[in-house]
Amino acid sequence: MIRYLARRLLSGLGVLWLVATAAFFLVFVAAGHPERVIGGPRATAGTLALIRRNLGLDDPLIVQYARFLGRLFEGDLGRSYIHQAPVATMIGERLQTTAILVLGASVLWLAGGVLTGVLGATRARGPLDRAVTLFVLAGLSTPAFVVALMCLYLFFGTAGDLGVHLFEPGPPLQENFWRRMVLPWFTLAFLLMAGYSRLTRGSMLDVLGEDYIRTARAKGLPERRVVYRHGLRAALTPVVTQFGVDVGALIGSAIVTEKVFGLQGVGQLVVQSITVGDAPVILGVVLAVAVCVVLANLAADLACSLLDPRVRLT
Image 1 (cartoon, rainbow, N blue to C red):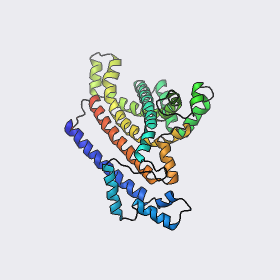
Image 2: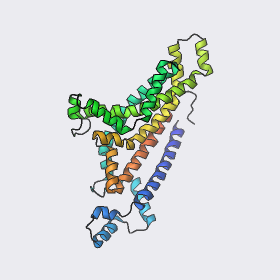
Image 3: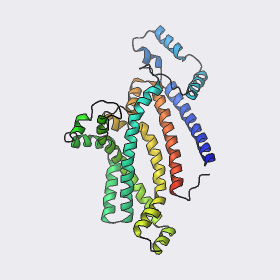
Image 4: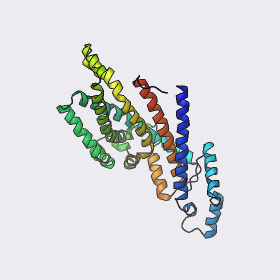
């Protein structure tokens, strides 16, 4: 186990280095002239040259890259061009809101997706299975902004305190904040629940055809125990793997949900930074999302080894 964790952490560091390198050249090199972002449209040529010199942009590219990696090893993501604040602090302030959004919705979509997938697999080609199929098609074909706007239209005026506090600004972990998260949780969960339902159904159908399932039934075990203890445990392996990928990636991609519901999360931050060309913030968000994806995949692999004894961590 320790050797496996050490090897995965080393490979994760390699992935982060590749992401950081690619992001550096795409954001800082291809972004154009950051001195114009800082100086504004009326800055003189002398002012622009002074800004470039202060930022170290006059140095050779390899020197800028080495300086960038050195700051990363120290945990320094630089400072925002627009706000003149540490990028790590700006991301930390927004990450809490996005993490609550993603983790709260993940509980709903995982539980709902697994439940509907199991019901569809155990009643294959029946009315319930057809209803699950219709739900999957509806969820996969509906854009995120449509679901969000439908939730606002249906529930905003009749939600009582929820409607009052939905767009009221407030820091995370406040009473009003939790009320504001109900509709965003439901929106994000609906979009992903359909995919998890289809994935669980297909995996369950494969597992229920295995020899050990037929052996368990031949021994006279109750069908509920066969399905949920022996079948579901093995069928959850691909579901947990996909869950690790989605949770990590959604940290930086829940932009539409945050935008519609006015949540000040990482998605809002990256959209605002792209609009004004704030390269350090864009790069910082990319690296933060990469770290979340690496850690989430590691946790998913460990969970798979606990669910299925046939999976060995070597």
